[in-house]
Structures are given as structure tokens and as C-alpha cells.
Amino acid sequence: MATKMILDCDTGVDDTMAIMYAALHPDIELLGVGSVWGNVDVPTATRNTIHTLELVGAGHVPVAQGAAGPLLRTPNYFGYHVHGDDGQGNAYDHAPVGPAAPTTAAQQIVEIVRANPGEVWLVPVGPLTNIATALALAPELPELVAGVSIMGGAALAPGNTSPAAEANIAHDPEAAAAVFRAPWPIIMVGLDVTMKVLITPERRAVLDAGGPTAQYMSRIMQFYGEFFEKTTFGTWAATMHDTLAVAAAAGTLKIRSAPNVNVEVDCSGGPSRGATVCDMRGIYAGFPPQPGAHCQVLLDVDDSIADEVIELIARHQPA
Ligand code: RIB
Ligand code: CA
Image (cartoon, rainbow, N blue to C red; front, side):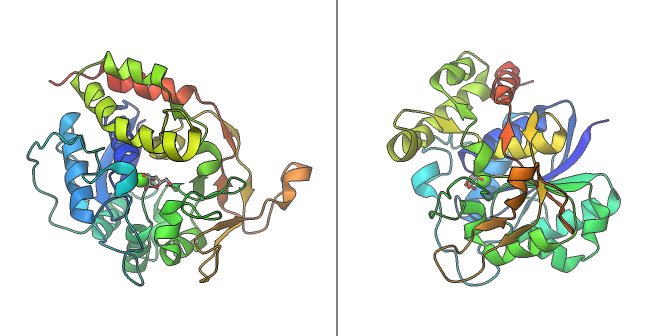
């Protein structure tokens, strides 16, 4: 049976790939997508989300616009320097898109989950503002979902927006704290694994040789890969962060190490604000059970998922 899923995206470049993968994979049933501020402002995230779904022939999937900023305060920053002014590596094709659904991302989550009790995976791959808002609207959500697969955080790896914090958590630590605290099964797909599964130039060549959707994906990742070349790797490479959270929820990611540990989010005003404080003290003893733990923290995965994702997208031909 296909995995039912709701994505929640701040649609920049890696979110675009995650949406394509979720919409195209035959074992995933994408029931809805929410947009959220983060990489870009929320109207741009909404437009990019609808555009991506239309590209892959999934324009029927409802896209509901979500939060324009964090639960408290105003947006701390956007990621235009990473994803381009249009969130598509400054290579958006300016195609007009259809309308968003007449609801909010949080309300859409509540309605879809209530209609499919026990079946839906929430896959937030941007700031957790919409998920925290959905929880506030329907505190019973943790009993109704199959699980939550979050792209965000870092257990043993360094942060990316600060030495300690990963962007999706740092954007809205109070929302993230509420989400990690709620008693649902969580998979934390953080920088420990997402910085190690890369679209290399060789993998990108498979997209270049594919259909128009794959070629669009390759085009928009040029700027994004240049950002990583300049700031991180010293050579052109594109991370695929968000797709790994989709694959973890769908069971298509080969997971080698994922201890179930307690996780708290630092909501202080200090240098670790937005850090995911994962209780890794069991590392020397094979991670014995921790009372109350409900978060599997991915530490090691097989990077063959990158080839599977690229090939799926490369094969897609518009109807
Ligand atoms: O830190 C990486 C995450 O931040 C990814 O989800 C990326 O799209 C941005 O939202
Ligand atoms: Ca994202």
C-alpha cells in the first residue's frame, strides 16, 4: 500500500526535488502540500510548490499557503542567497500557476489527518511553524498520524545557520520545540545524514540527459551548488536535504543507524538557539532504551537513494 503523505515546504531548490520525488514515486500518495516561509517568502514558496506539482503532472494535489513568519517575532532571515531570489536558483521559467487551496496549511493538515486516521505521514521540510499551528488547532493530532519525518536539526554534525543550529529549526525554535515535545513518532532527518548525500556533477548529468522536468531540476540547482562550492565543499555539489525526509517516511531510504533518543530544542537567546539537543550519551553502549524517547535520529544512511531519486525524475515525461 502506498504511504499517505502531507509535505510542508519552504520551496527552494532542494524542496523542489522532494516534491518531485513524492509526487512521482509510485509508493507514495501525496494528499496535500503546505507552504511556509523560510528559504523564501511564503507567496513565493506557494507559487514554487504549485509550479513543481504541475511540472510533474500532479496539479490536482492541493497546496495550502501557511505561515509568513515564525510563531513569535518576525522572520529572522530568508535563504535567497542559497536558493536565488525566486527560490529556483534564479532560473524560474515564469510559467503562470493555478490557485492555492482556499484554506491554510495548518487547517489542511488537520482535515486530511482526521479523514485518514492512523495513516498519514507529515513530512515538514521547512520551519515547523505550520506543524506547531496544526497541533494547537488539534491537540489530538499525535494520536492520529502515522508519524512525522522532519528535515531538520543536527545531532553530532555542526549546524548550518550557526555553529549549533540547522536552518529549519533555527527559523522557528519555539515551533520546533512544540513539535519535538508532542508524543508522536518522529524521524529526525538532520544534517548528520543530509550533508553526506550529494548530487555530484556525475549524478546531475543523469538529469541533463532526462526529460524536461529533470532538465528544469538540473537548471535550478546550478546556483544552489555554487553556494555549496563557495561556502562548504570547495567543489560544485548540491545537497538534497528534503528528499531524504520524504524517503525516510516512505521507507525507501536504507537506514544504517538511527537511535531512538530524547530531543529538546534550545529556545534560549544564546549562541545555541535553535539547536536540537539530542541525548547521544548511549553512543558507547549501543544506545540503550531511553524512557520517553520517541525520536529516531538518523546518523547514517545509504547514499544510493540519490541515484534512485535522480533516475525517477529523469524518467518522467510530461503527458
Ligand atoms: O538546512 C536545510 C534545510 O533548510 C532544507 O530544508 C532547506 O530547504 C532549508 O529549508
Ligand atoms: Ca526546505
